[in-house]
Image (tube, rainbow, N blue to C red; front, side, top):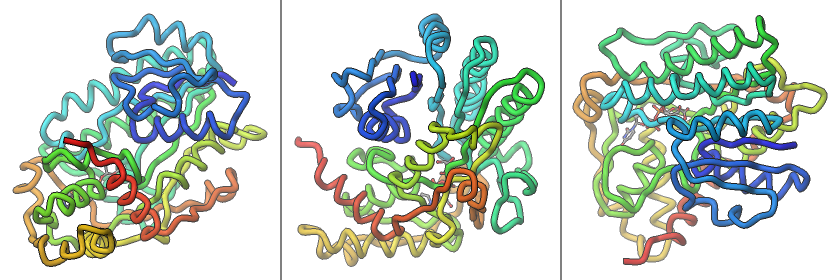
Length: 341
Ligand code: UGA
């Protein structure tokens, strides 16, 4: 099988590339990204060809690669709430517009597409858990610009689904629920714009305060990247067409924690690492309002639990890494990969 991965150097792309080269010895990957810093185990592998480039500029190369491959995995997207509020048009242009052209290539050349949707499409749906086929997708008013990501992704889900129904596009949509692990975001640079696990880790390692947006009672279900990639690999395997035309929530309903609990757990786990024993007393936890932290276009999700019945039934997949173990491995990775001055 020849797979085209766009955004191969990102969090999902780099872990997927590592896994495939290790566990699918007869697959070949053609890959593109702006940089290659997370691909050191892939570059030079005889089944991995990499082109450094921007998907919005390398359009001829992408079209030629889509023609040649069997499956396309377009992972290039902005997936960070701080940017949804600060630069919503960039989210629309990249996540929707740039990817639409790639979806259309798949239709034209009759290629299978495996596309990342998101848990955010459920928005503030009151359902617990969120079901792919029955939950309503509920977003906020237009001035709450955070929802441009959810709406861009939802629109793409609908476009892909319609191409599937009316033009025979072979597709699978997967919805990550707060995947975390090594390479999620950079933790060694100072800043306040990362997703929560890497943001808290960055704060703790720099011994800066942690801020709980809106008080920290909101909950997420976290999924460790190794579990997530096993699910994605089963989708790509598509044994007997088990993933065709389906949408899969990929998350762990048993790894739910409030954001305040997450902060405490991370402080405890980092505190068990040499050199960080006093971190619990050094890092203050305070509360800030959502709009004060992210900007006036922010609105939060209180609780987000995936129904993973579809993934269990059709992919034979269940998560196996606990939140605590996943965090421990993530912390160990970042400590082992501390940049030298
Ligand atoms: C995320 C992102 O939109 C995407 O990465 C992704 O599509 C999706 O959800 C997912 O992975 O399922 P969200 O969970 O809100 O959205 O993003 P985080 O930045 O990880 O924040 C989680 C919670 O922690 C939010 O309630 C946020 O307000 C809070 N938070 C974040 C803090 O309390 N303090 C911080 O410093 C950062």
